[in-house]
Image (cartoon, rainbow, N blue to C red; front, top):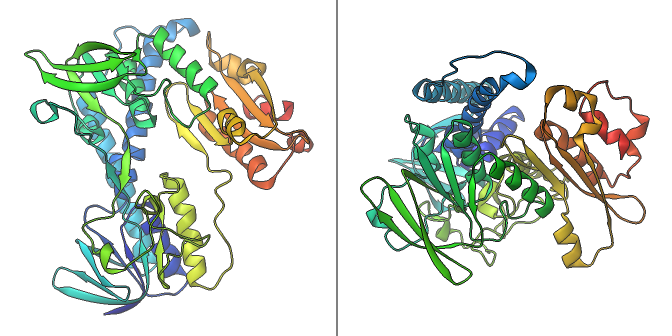
Length: 446
C-alpha cells in the first residue's frame, strides 16, 4: 500500500494534518497506537477542562450567598463527574473519526515503526509513503526520587480517573498541570499542598500574574512550598510523606494522596526514529525549519516532538504549515504569539513577552496594568473578586506581551495575541466597536 502522506501519531497535530491533507486530495494513512485524539483529548486538555468546569460549578453553588442565591445542601458526585468526563471524550473522539473518514483518511490502530523515510511498518503490514509526518507527542516525566518505587502516587492520568475525594493531596510541581489539579481539588474542598522547586509557580508565565494567582489560592487554603526540592518519598499508614529541602532546611509534609506533575518530555523512542538520521536539538528533539521540515527531505515533525512549544494549539498550526509545505505553499510558522492558558479559577492567560524575558534581553518597555473591575460586566459577575490586565509595550506603543488574570482570560487572550502577532500598537483596537457590557472591551482602554 502506497500513500502520498503517512502520519505517525493521532493527536492534535496528527489528526489535523491527516484531515487537511485528505481534504486536499492526497492519499493519507494515519497511525495511532491508542485512541485518536492523543493525550490532549483522551487524558489532557479536554478531560481536565470538563472536570474543572464541574468543580467550578460546585464551588459557585457553595458560595452562591454572595449573589443572594440560596443553594443549600450542595453536593458533588465525583464518580458521575468522571463518568461525564469519559462521555465527553468518547463523543469528541467519534467526531474526529468522522472527520477523518469524510476526508478519506486511512486510520490504522497500532504501533507504527519507521523502516526508512518512505516505509512504515505496523503489525504485519508495510506501508509506502512519499512524505512522512511525525507527530508522536510527549509523555509524563517521572523523576527518580528516592522512595518513588515504594509509594502510591498519581500522574495526571490516575487523577483524572479517581472517583474518591481525598481529605488531603500533595502536588509535586506547580506548573500548568499541577495548578489546574490544585484548582480542581481545592474547589472540592480538599486540603492541597503544592511543592515547587522554583521560587514561583507557573514558570514561564509573567511572575507578577503568577504571584497574584498563588496569593488567591493561598487565601483559599492551598499551602505552597516554593524553592523546595523533593528529596524522598515515604509511604505511611495513612498516606504519603514527601520530604524536601528548602534553603538548606529539611522538612516533610504528609497527605492522603500524592500527585506528581513535573512536566512532559517528547516521545522520541520506540517507533524507529533512529533509522531516519534526523538532526536534533540540544534537548534531543527533532530540529525543524519554518515549514516544519526536518533535515531529511520529505520528513516533517509537528507538535511536541520538535520541542518548540508543547501545546495542542501550536501543534494544530504546525500541522497546517506542514501540510501546506507538502502542497507547495510558502506559509511559514510564527511563534511570536502562541497563547498560554492556565484553566484555574480564575483563569490565567499569557501571550508574547514577559517582563522577565524583556529584562533578560535588554529590551526597553513599559508596563500598563489595570484591574478587570474597570469592566462593568466583570464586576457584575465576580462579586468580591478582582482580575488584572497587564500589557507590555515599547517606546512606539507596539504591544510586546499581554498577560491576564481573571475570567474569561482564555477567551480574551487571542485579542492580545492579534496585536503581538501583527505588531499592533496600543490604540489598534480603539477603532473597533466592542459590545457593551463585555470584559473584552477592556482592550479599548489600552
